[in-house]
Amino acid sequence: MKLAAAVMACAVSFAGTAMAQQGSPENVEVQAAAKEAGLEFKDSRYRNGDDQPTPVVTRISKVDWATWQGFRRYHDACHVCHGPNALGSTFAPSLADSLKTMDYETFYGTVVGGRVREAGGTTAVMPAFGDKNIMCYLDDIYTYIKARSLNAEGKGGMPPGPSEWS
View 1 (tube, helix red, strand yellow):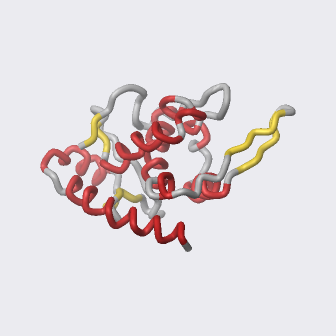
View 2 (cartoon, helix red, strand yellow):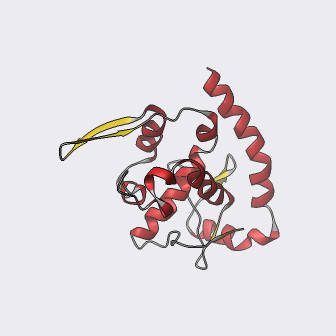
């Protein structure tokens, strides 16, 4: 219950910022890319037809506010293990590769509940991160990693290196 209250508090504070960004004149390119992709702006994020948070990346690597926030939060909490640009490390797998096949619900459950996996005689452990510093931005972290994943698949996602939010 405590976690649910933290998530709701974060959603309310985030919504005002995202709504302001979504309606800003500088955001025209991102809005056009979202419209072209058939995405809907709902609950302060762009969402696909399955109501999953979805990144918006323009041809010149401008991204939506949620994807930019995901970049910031990923590099605050996740990159230590999963490496820069979500491409993995010797310690943890590439999340860009994982999200090629992992759906949003599985990603969410893994972050919230953790995961233990045996591979090649090694036990890999993803700890549960059910705290507000992760939970408040989990959709954003997902959109950032998904943008990296789409790029890794050659589907116009977010390339490594600098991007700007709009």
